[in-house]
Image (tube, rainbow, N blue to C red):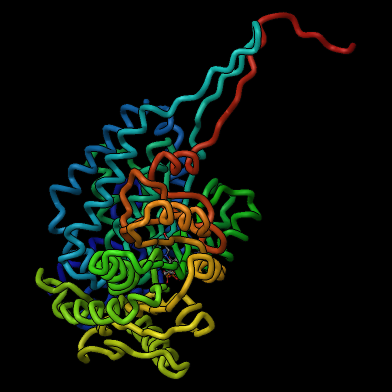
Length: 485
Ligand code: NDP
């Protein structure tokens, strides 16, 4: 019998499901059991062509609609997503392995927030009037044209919406390629947009590995590329986009610092560290994986952290009591287990976890290392799994310098009751998305993105509009034209 997660076909182009079985089969594996639940096919060159030409043809008419009309469609799509939250969350859990306890509140709901928010903004995208004596300049905020979205595997519904919603609000068309690891959820976003009244062809989804992404990025018809992925992929995609002078948004990896001062509320700080390391089994780009704890509270912090981490419930992700799921793939599990071994070899003190849990599925226990030093591999490289490194510090000046000593700059957090210090420290940290006495909140109203190697551009908020539109300025002369000859 066909598994309920199996989509009708691999791709969604021009308002309908499309198949081309000549493409390389991509098995979809349920991370909790290792069982194959679906198969899709990578896009062939014919599918890539169909998606791009369809989107290109549909975009101009979409951009000519009023912002109010476009926004209404996006807000209707948000309502449909919320009505179907349960089914979409189950699919997200099949796609990623993340527990239903999380997906019910973090994925389709966050996608719907983006559709609603950018739907609401669509009608307000206006230009300026700039008076110049009798003459004047006016500006128009125009769509970029054809946008490509390329997603990572940790938030397949959310990423499809975080890129699609602002792109469509501004009058662009999109071709979205999900990660080959999680190909299912974006198809539902495309289907729902059509149900909500979007014209066929303005939001298309095609499957494939990096080479399909590469074909999209290098196509001369494409005006903008928005990638969520690792730094090495980001460098390749950015370089390819630069060849065609395309706009880019790069949401890449991190190794973010979370700084906990002696005066912090210990339970809130432990909660922040848990949210910043173990949500989605640690597969979150903005995670605060370098937890700097001031020496005075170190042992108290570690004891409370170990106690609360022991309350994690690993198990069937479809059981709403489960609070901690598997790694997305066997490969990712092995990468993370490799980092855990490295941590032990390089002399970090294992506080809890550190092993694979069970042999069905790709579970790893939530793992905490203490006495981690700045030069250890686990303190320098992005692990993308449930491995927290706790480092000690003495002074504010020292911790800020050490926190900034990384190529990354996605997020940063600080826990302290001293508000002057909190703002001063955040002001000195090199990071794009920061938190005070909290960690990992990502409301659509707030800009999200990194500095340094963690990326270029911002998603969400009004900032995202700037990255999916461009300004045309028009000089209007009222009098005669003066010329030299
Ligand atoms: P990858 O960088 O491996 O892949 C990201 C996407 O790019 C995938 O869809 C991939 O396809 C595609 N891709 C790979 N090579 C190319 C290429 N040459 N041209 C075009 N597209 C290509 O990342 P992961 O999927 O492994 O995701 C994990 C990474 O994403 C982590 O580093 C994490 O930090 C980052 N991330 C960043 C976020 C942010 O907002 N800053 C949010 C979430 C994750 P395929 O995999 O199918 O081959």
